[in-house]
Amino acid sequence: MAGPERLSFYVDEEGQVWAKLDRRTFLVGTTAALLTQVGVGLSPSSLPTIGVSDDLFGFAALAKSQWPDLRLSRPSPDYGVDLTALPPDGRAMEGAVMRMQFHQASTTAGRAMTTLTNVPRLTEFSRATSRGLVIGVDKAAGQPRFFALDA
Image (tube, rainbow, N blue to C red; front, side, top):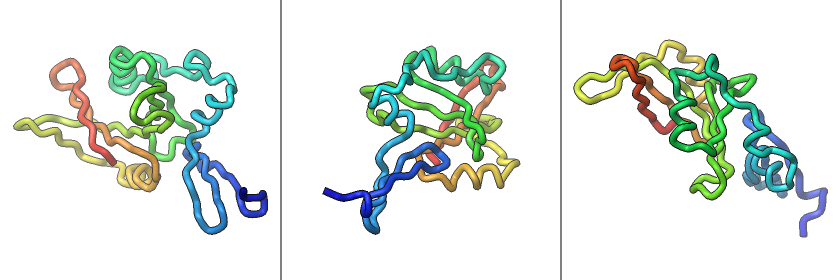
């Protein structure tokens, strides 16, 4: 068994918990997932929710209608992230936090196209090691359409 002189833990700026044993580093999980496991009151009802005024392009309303147990939040500071999502228990990526960044898009000939105007913000977003989605939003047809690219 590793003693405290060989094993240490730390939390990075994205809320991921890492364990360091000698020269090796291991991802233990997210802070939210670990706190839920030890029973520190992080029920879905106790987490902050996305209000109508904060809902980027209506994404939160659509996502919550399809996946009611999905937890969405706006990080602060954002590090280039518009929303973070925590899938419900029992999903393939249980406890994994997905970062999302949204951009206006248009569709032409069946392809979604966007112009990235804030390159430093995208660079900051893409530096993270956790799962990320760049989401293009086409609002031309009245109802927004969302296109995701795995970052």
